[in-house]
Image (tube, rainbow, N blue to C red):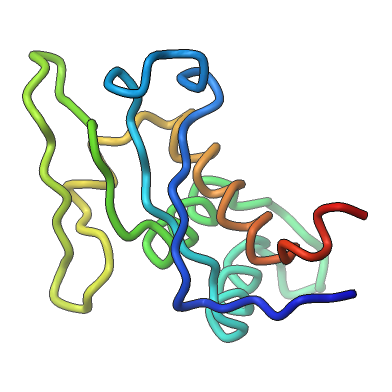
Length: 129
């Protein structure tokens, strides 16, 4: 049975590389699924087409950043190079700040964007199928 996706719900996500670490050594990211409108906005940023209608590029970086701006809502245990906590901050529109996005390593941005996308596509009831 298909289950509805609730874009107001959130979940904690631990990076694949950190799942075997003790809990106190993990970074936990707080994520949420995208609304239908947000998902359409994300899909619209994925491709660049020319005047002839041919696809010229797949904008994976922009695509991942757009997903993160909308679906990343917090974190715990995220530290800088010196081990100091990096505070989570939002911009004036209520989404994650550019400074926060800049602090996240590229491979982590892509993993988090993929996690948000998968949660948006598949409800908990569908996961067992």
